[in-house]
Image (cartoon, rainbow, N blue to C red; front, side, top):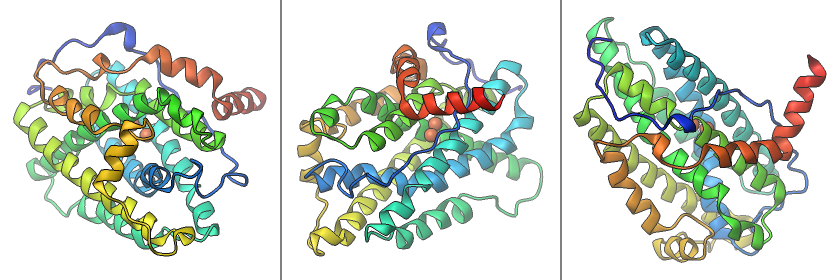
Length: 304
Ligand SMILES: [Fe+2]
Ligand SMILES: [Fe+2]
């Protein structure tokens, strides 16, 4: 592509072939507060189930349109692997929602808004073919690269969040989060490399980061408030305050505010490449031991 920017070199040892794992989870035994006695931390993490079904479906939708722009075979293979993984993530989080509803926490009022955001506001516009349509596609590719900085950050966090184990987190939910987190770490370079390949402009990186970060903070605090206010066990008194977030971050139940703040200048550094963050070896090791990923592997072998 003629306007491809030369970016920083990736760390070669962090590259791994990408494949989707056809996982499934049984939620029958997962309690509403899957982190026992910690409704705020539970629901703050539960916001993932509100945002990711529509969000990751949108990634797939945008990336299918991006495929014709890719002139590098290896990147094309990575993007196809990424599409397969994100489609599966979206379905896996979507499958948690009926379980929440069955426990008296109907997520539909919130997910209807998220669906509108991704399908209408960030969807395909009626734009003339050519430059305007291409501009909107590249803008969305850049937004996805910024979001993927955070999915990789969260994936790395959850793989290392030993405090969740110590506090007796539900093993099925932990496996969903860590299977997903490990695949986010595995494919963390793809979105940035695609953005570099089709545009890579620094001003666009900064602008779309600001949009993505603001939207994520807004949606997350709203989602946590929604869950806390509608949690039937809290009798309408549940609140989600910044102080709770800071407190649970210090306890290791959520990412810490400090770690999140430090991740900002890394993405905005001109020398940034996602392969400098997180560990592919750790992700691959988790996927080799994940109950859901192992069951998926066994099913694939059995069916082939
Ligand atoms: Fe994902
Ligand atoms: Fe991802």
